[in-house]
Image 1 (spheres, rainbow, N blue to C red):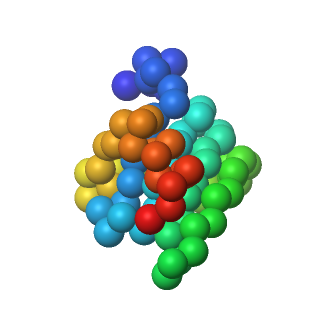
Image 2 (cartoon, rainbow, N blue to C red):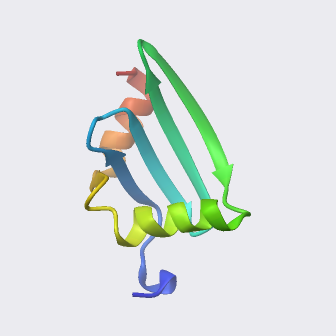
Image 3 (cartoon, helix red, strand yellow):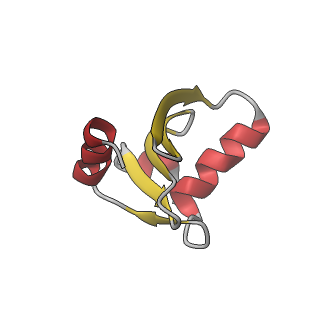
Length: 82
């Protein structure tokens, strides 16, 4: 499946519920990291191969590390916390 066949944004979270992802396009994503009782939100531009590969894996072969979530679940985590 090519990236033009994907309806962005795409949402994922790690199975341990410690990181939530909003993949905006194949070279840009936002991450919410839960570290203890704190929440860190960062936007990442995938400019180098390891980052691009990571985004590709989150989009296409995420089943071993993450699960699909809804945009609503992502936004709720973003505004409310853990």
